[in-house]
Image (tube, rainbow, N blue to C red; front, side):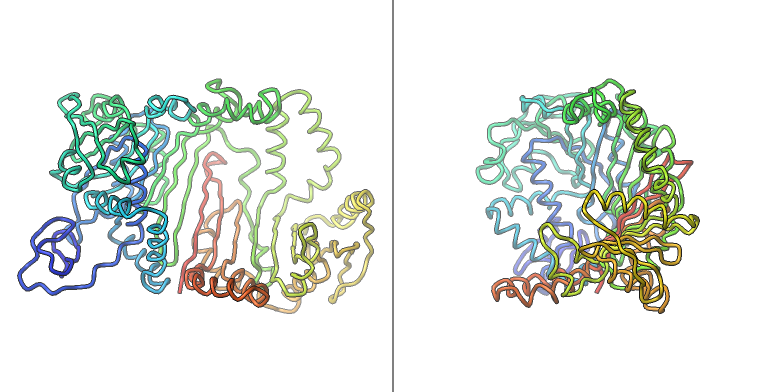
Amino acid sequence: MICSHCGADHSPNAQSYGTCMAPVPMGAPVTAARANRPLGLLAAVGLTAMLVGGAAIPVAAKAPNKSNNVPRASAASFTSVANLLPASTVLFASFNPNPGGDQGANLRTIESAFGGQSLFNTISKLSASTSTSSCSDVSKQILSWVAGPITLAITDPAALKSSKSSKASAKGVAVLGAVKPGLSVSGVMTKNHLGTAVPAGTYAGVSIYSLKPASGCMSNAVGSSPTYAAIVNNVAIIAGVQTEIQREIKVAQGKAPALSSSAAYKNIIAKLPPTGIAYMYLDLPAIVKATSGAAAGALSGSGSPLGALSGSAGSGSQVANQLGAAGVSLVAQANGLDLQAVAVSKAPIPNASATTPNHGASVLPQGSIFYLSMGNLKGLINGVLDAVSSGSPTSNQQMAQLRMVFGNVLNLLDGEFALGVLPIRPASLSKLGANDTTGLPLAVLFNVSKHPDAGSTISTVLTALGSSLGLSFKPSKSPHGNTEFTAKGGYGYAILKGWLLISTSIKNVTKSVESVLYGGAPSLASGSSYKLGMTSAGKLNASVMFFDIGQLRTTLEKLILPSSTAADRAQYAKIRPLLVPFRAITLSTGMENGGKVVRANMLLVISK
């Protein structure tokens, strides 16, 4: 029987529900234990890691959903976390381990694609095999009192800097996770046999405890490092230093400004989807300034062009001066997991707001494994060159010379740029080697329909490059009468209906592309996996990437498994059911507000 209070099933012969401890009615039938929700294991493992690390945990309380006692994942529930974090917070990542509503339903739909719980049961078994039983028990115990989003936060930029002192590194780190009403630090520890909580003092009327983990998994991991805890308004705070707990108490009591009052935070959260299972917020200027000193050193010092972009810590580097805040959300869709990101810059990003025609998918054949389309490669390259040129007079002169040499070629890049990996045939695969990619059916496409002289321009450049590499391009006719230029090893180029095609296997690739352009063969754009992926990615306008996981899997099964050992084939047979539901990955970017807002979207397509 399912509990009307918390939605849990009772175990055989149990007198109460393990989650909320409500009594089981007399005569209640014994039912199979409810399958763990997909993120339940991750939540338990994640929270255990947070506890072991001695981080601070403030948690936002939220009224339970009466139907299943699980708060519906929404931007509002995650925003409540920002009400408890100080305005100086530079990063927080939050997820709901037990989402309800549409998110929970969508996750269960995704689960069904894996034949019930096979995927997550396998993960659970793998996790159990690499950890002690006591660790597994602790994870379950901790999860039993979590009532909402769990959050890891960096509340002070100084925490991003490396420090030899473990006590110093514990400052400015917080982990947030809602606890059920009425719980106390001491009660949680003793009830779940996690150890004891010893009073360590009070702050602003709130009792703070020192945690003494029980012997076993947690005590071995935590060691002798002190860990403190407090609960304020159903918000559990666990930290390596008491001052971090005090910081969150001040915010919770309205004695210090909260992150939620920040204009940058409000701007970002308003641009993310209103529902999701996870959210992340990043103060990019603070993060760059706090870490740019090490970055500059890694880039050969601040005297180099790239080092000058990074600058020294706190110096107001060029990068940090242009950045604003950023945010990420994870939404469960019925056909997969949708990751959306948004970043705001203080100044428009130059040459980066052109629209992607995304016509390349209509040129490549169906079954192509990989596809990338960009609408303004010329603008992107010029933007990078401009940024590097600003580093020093010397680099400016070098970039000017580079533009002069490749100026005509850069002019060809003002249209769509597309890159594709066509279906791989056994004959092509047999030619591939560690240092030889001439058998790879790679298609590089440039839309040069506005440039009637594209053929002569690219011929001049490739001929010059080819002579230095020992390659000589010879013309020949394609099946549809187009001129191909082929060099030794299969390298070559051709212009097909306004598309400049460059390939490592030009004859085979030209034949495939021409079959779509002239023969009506099905294109990548007409495929079901591509259409599924474009449900989210197609909304953005700067670049699109598509990776057909299903096609890659079937290709490997046809070309590699037959020659594999019996042991390898048997091992693959075990994991194959977990791979089949993964159909595709799409990634797209777009610009808004004149280039001041950058958006990115990634969709992992999962379906039966």
